Length: 92
Image 1 (cartoon, rainbow, N blue to C red):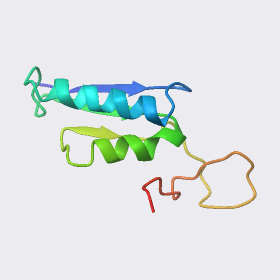
Image 2 (cartoon, helix red, strand yellow):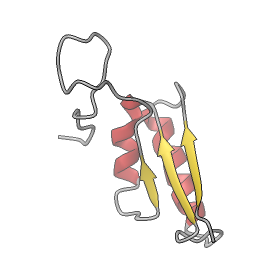
Image 3 (tube, one colour):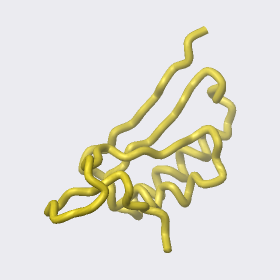
Image 4 (tube, helix red, strand yellow):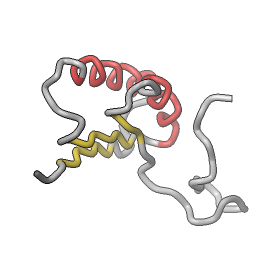
């Protein structure tokens, strides 16, 4: 059986508070047993400013993950508005 990859790219939608509410609701519904984590891979791709908040909500969930929509190839530098993959969004 092939694994289903269910990924949600939020584009430029949902502020951190809205993303937290959505992630909590999804986690609650996912706990209802309507899918198998062995058969379905669920990953959320919120905007950069919302990633850290959503990560916190889903920190204890092995079946729901969070990704980044895009990333600049350089780790750092004078690239206005760019976000590198090296930038950690976890709270300090």
